[in-house]
Amino acid sequence: MKSSLYQQLLNKSTTITIIGLGYVGLPLALAFAKYFRVVAYDINESRIAQLKQNIDPSREIASSQFLEKDIFFTSNPDDIAASKIYIITVPTPIDVYNLPDLQPLKSASNEVGKVLKKGDYVVYESTVYPGCTEEDCLPELIKENKFRLNQDFKLGYSPERINPGDTQHTLEKNIKLVSSSDEESLEQLTKIYSQIVTAGIHQATSIRVAEAAKIIENTQRDLNIALMNELALIFDKMGINTHDVLEAAATKWNFQAFSPGLVGGHCIGVDPYYLTYKAKKVGYNPNVILSGRYVNDGMGAHVAKKTMQLMLKQGKTIQNARVLVLGATFKENIHDVRTSRVVDILHELADFGVCVEVHDPYASQEDFRRYYGFELIEQLRSDYDAIVVAVAHKEFTDLEEDFFIKHSSSNPLLIDVKGIYRKKIKKLLYWSL
Ligand SMILES: NC(=O)c1ccc[n+]([C@@H]2O[C@H](COP(=O)([O-])OP(=O)(O)OC[C@H]3O[C@@H](n4cnc5c(N)ncnc54)[C@H](O)[C@@H]3O)[C@@H](O)[C@H]2O)c1
Image: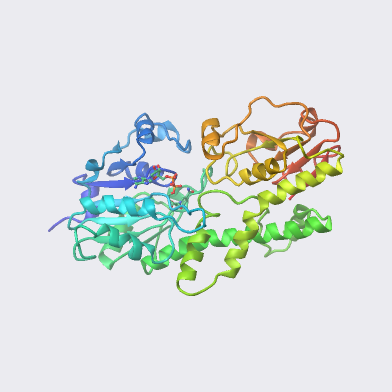
């Protein structure tokens, strides 16, 4: 009897290829490489060069995690031809109009389509709108080979739930959603993923259900934060501190804890737009979701305007005022500056003639300049008219009031986007979202 795909992987008579080695693909490839032979493919040659030296360019995974793994890193598409299962973990960004940009997904599908063989499996892990795998990716896979789904090959979808910078909710410890194009392949994929996910597998009833489940997880979070941000806008007009309100409300047994803030990153600020795109395509205008996005996307400009308003109140002029922004990455304790909303604060301040300086212990100078045209500074001055703490890096959370006074001109102002210094600041003019 022919052995199953799972058995072939286990006895290493075949390989599994992971396509796209970023936040999602790399930990997945390394996890499978404990048990199976893995081909880890990425189009970015410099990324592959670093991975070959056991360096994760996203700096999420320690070098020690690369040891004793059966893994082959490559940027050569010929190297993926012999695998029997392909897992695609490429980015799903949005364009300047906030519409899904499926280019990476389509080109990866094309690449796999070229080497697809009868009996192969293709699984997508990228976050997409319901229907995308079957309506947009499948046609790319079969464009040239004219294979028939389920007769010639199987198609699966299994979204990822990792959270950059979070060492608790790792791939292994999150229940994994798995879906597939037929019963047999669903059972195989369940076995294959069970090998690495200790938290368990949930078999979704269809690929569309799994796609929809993933997209609503992040949409729900986006909307919950949007509500907090809207409350912060309202309470600001009323002179009430939102964090004080949330602390009081959280004493109710069923109050949900969320806090206001900038919503950057590749997921929460992006995924809802995939859903709203599809919703409009099927004839529904998703007002609630889009309103949330509108509120969240406007928070950087709000923080900047508030900074300028309070500087005026302190008797300062806006033109050529010096403002220090602490934090540039899209969230705390990570290195990635892509999709950071801190940049909205910088642009808004700079548009009004403010001299803005940015310091971040994690962000790369080169990346920040390349993506946004702003320089990062190392040496802090002692005459800032305002200091904005935009990201709650652990290096910032313990700073004392004296630190801010030391780096400020007269009539100092501290803007605390995340509310981390609340109750600690006595002498400075203090504002938080
Ligand atoms: N970052 C997260 O926390 C997270 C969590 C869950 C789901 N996701 C989803 O997972 C997907 C991947 O996100 P990510 O954060 O890992 O992205 P990433 O930007 O960190 O990495 C993606 C990698 O794919 C590579 N790539 C792009 N096009 C390719 C192609 N055609 N062939 C081969 N490689 C290609 C890039 O060079 C890059 O190394 C997205 O859909 C994202 O929404 C991300």
